[in-house]
Length: 168
Image 1 (cartoon, helix red, strand yellow):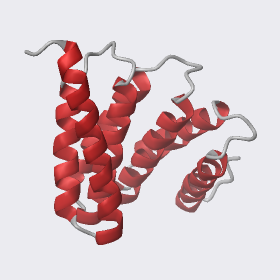
Image 2: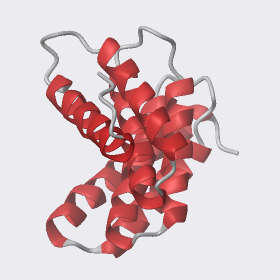
Image 3: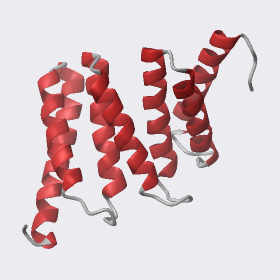
């Protein structure tokens, strides 16, 4: 294996390429670009040591690409892998980390998508718990706070629709 100082530039290039493919797919609708992006980001994650400072971000990028591909293809394996990557991303940062709110929000969104697919109340309950944790980790003026609140509202609405109980 090449020394870390040699591997890191290649990982950065692969990450940028993978994210460019994701952005391009959002404009073009090409699922093949999502697949290429997922392959590149998997390589980056597998080459990233557990203690690397960018590991959580790289896992989160992989989760985002897999969730996007799931939304286009409906492949449950992509959704499950996205949740796994998002869980690992959250586990890779300590409480109070500056990206923790975003990582929790991504995990909550993926769990909510799985609930919408499977109807699993356990996924919905976990999504609500995780999104609430994201809210608690997000300061008042944060630009992503509205998205997190919107996701929480939608998940709580789904729980209400399912149970008929107000839970706020």
